[in-house]
Length: 201
Image 1 (cartoon, one colour):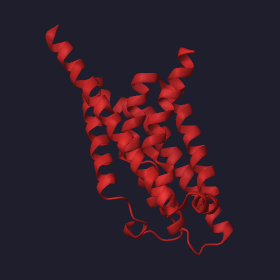
Image 2 (image 1 turned 180 degrees about the horizontal axis):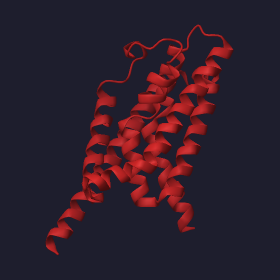
Image 3 (image 1 turned 180 degrees about the vertical axis):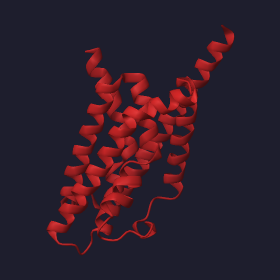
């Protein structure tokens, strides 16, 4: 049962950080006017890009940090601050499709959809924090499951948008941003407490 709990606890913060429902209107706006085959190509491109970056960072991220001499509690505080800043930014300035940096229809699956929309700094920070707390297998499983959810949601984006509407997508994105901020504060608290316990000993 404890192993199942690790999988669940690793899944939730990554799901919140990706915020697939919040990114749904952007995906629809960027692929507007495309044929069904073109949308499918962009969808596959974005999911493969996001999955590759996430899995790659999962394995080399900690190595880079060990070379730099960064401890777990250092990253907890830094990662928590990053998540908190991104949450506040998303609450005040929701992402807009027309602000995507010069993306052509050929590469929008890579940039901006694959990264930074699906896998950006907030997701990468969350991945490394999940590895420290729950291990590689639960974190990797959570990444794969979240990418599958992204694929399904974007695949049926028109039906989902019609069901919950643009307001529903926006509301979900705001709730996700608040949860992301709360996770960031929790990580900062854990990192500070770890530093304090070390200084006492």
